[in-house]
Length: 285
Image (cartoon, rainbow, N blue to C red; front, side, top):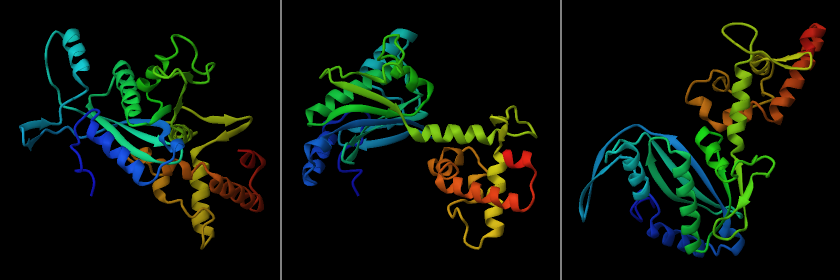
């Protein structure tokens, strides 16, 4: 209903900011809700070029567009003025402290570099201030470009020791960077998935003398499905365990196998194995 209210051009568009202010005013958003942070993410897209017709004429959509400053730097570096098809899109969303959420901008990219990300982030912080929105944190995943982007703010210092806190370039108030917890959940799940004593696995995770194997998660799931008409962990499905490239990226599939319901199921499965006479070594794992 709303995506065509304003032109969805790459970069920071004042029409979008005006729309954002109207939405905030219409919901009587308090001042604390106009304080918040920027959530940013870069996602892969299918390469494609399209012709968009406007009142000013025709334009090509689907090319990398990171602003004039980035284009000028790429020309200086390569010595050529070229255009390339985008393979990713960088999106930034404002998230207020009271839950107000609004997508503010997107940029077609070919995997953005840390320096460009630095420039676009701080341009966005300054741009949001024009509409009365103040940024105090940045949330992002743990990709290499994002980690390097965060490191740029600490001038060789350890971000951990600095508690991932630096100064806002415009207000000199604290600016906090933190990694999206969902990314960490998926990394933990992916690490456990690769933990095995058989097949092509190159790792076996351990805690003390016990092993942490993906097989135990799958065995607990089968136990729950076979023994209970109403499963103890009702959210689990085969999709949680037979993972592919797309399903590995889905946040809830990682959360569901690491949450309290999974712990409850594991304890029930262990008790069942005790009753069935499992060996001490098996129970320790």
